[in-house]
Length: 245
Image 1 (tube, rainbow, N blue to C red):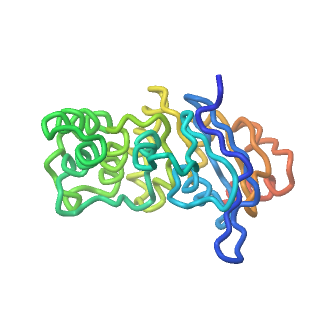
Image 2: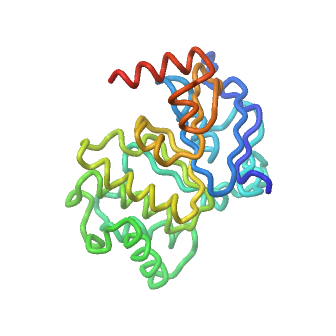
């Protein structure tokens, strides 16, 4: 089986800043890959390059057999295959939870309102918010808003989900509800690439942990190996620091 995500030799420059320095990352279907590393190591930039929210300076990216960097690729169509959940929820404040979820179904996927409503309600059901369909974001907790954002992505039936620090803006007691949704997505077979500081979740749920530093993948392997017996000094230092907190 070819990998569902294959990024090769990804470089990204912001002016004179060289943020990604030739990153290779293959992700198998149904795999949950957790990307960790210090701030500024290039983790979020890598995620954003995968769905072309950032344009890589050079390299190649293939997702679900779509060449993401080809000028012939319809990027809006391609992005339906790659859901993304951000640190900030990016919900429209004047729309209900259901309205936020169904907007892309209607505008991007071309569904009728009735069809979009059925799919939107099913997506809200999956994240445990069927009873909040008609609430606006201001009436929801941060954790509920993030779950609406996840529902918005999964309603389009993506093949891959990218999570960029999905819990870092949440109060600690709300983190669990979002991680529970991510866990259930994983159990349903969703391929996921997660950038996060939730190391307990990484240990429990990840198939593979990728450690990045200074724009490169330094080391990768199963969670037990990375957290308990990392091979690289930089990885050991980073793990030591986070375990002290």
